Each structure stands twice: as structure tokens, then as C-alpha cells.
Amino acid sequence: MNFDAGTWWLALLLLGGLTGGFWFLLKRTVFERVDKLERSVGESVKKGDYDKDMKEVREDIEKIKANYITKEDFFREQAKTDRKLDRIMDILLEMKGDKKG
Image (cartoon, rainbow, N blue to C red; front, side, top):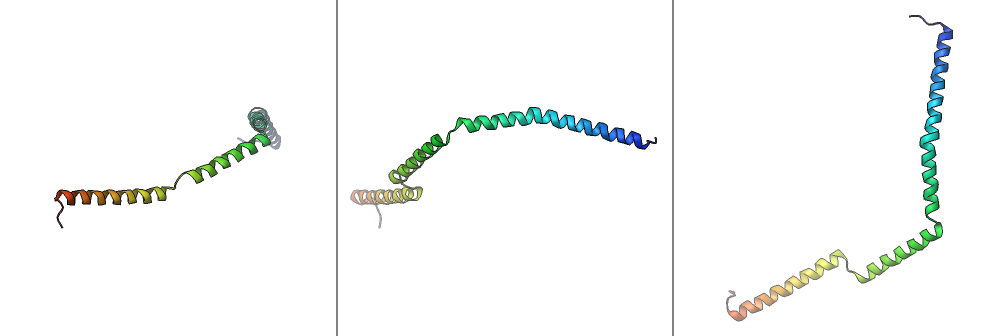
């Protein structure tokens, strides 16, 4: 099958038209929806409200830091309590006379 130069131009023109039409439909449907969502998200949160909320969150974090212990402190205190309980058990066993040593 042999095509002449006019046929190639027609094929390229048709392909370009189809590509342009596809791009136009894509832009009109998908990209418009994305732009509309972006605008609605931008309108839903005002900067003043965002700053106020962030300040409250930071204050809450500071309160938590001040009023609660860290995981390491908890384990350290738990180990102290365990040692005290072990000592109490040793004393009780000595009083009963069951402890050897």
C-alpha cells in the first residue's frame, strides 16, 4: 500500500484534530473540576481562622508537655515502684521466715 504526500498530510491533520479535540474535552471536564475544587478548598478555610486554630493547637501541645510525663519517665518511675515492691516482698518473707539467705 503506497500513500502519496496528500494522504499523509490528511492523516496528520486528522490526528492533530483528534488530539486537539481530546485535549479540549479533557481540559473542559477534568481540569475544570480540579480548579473548582481548589477554589472551594481555598474559600473554606480563612487565614484568620487557620491562624487562630493553629495557636490553640500549639497551646494544647504546650499544656500536654507541661502536665504529662514522657514515656522514658514513666518507665523509670515504674522501675522504681517495682524495686520498692520487691523490697516489701523481701521484708514480708523475712518476717515470715521463708526467705533463705
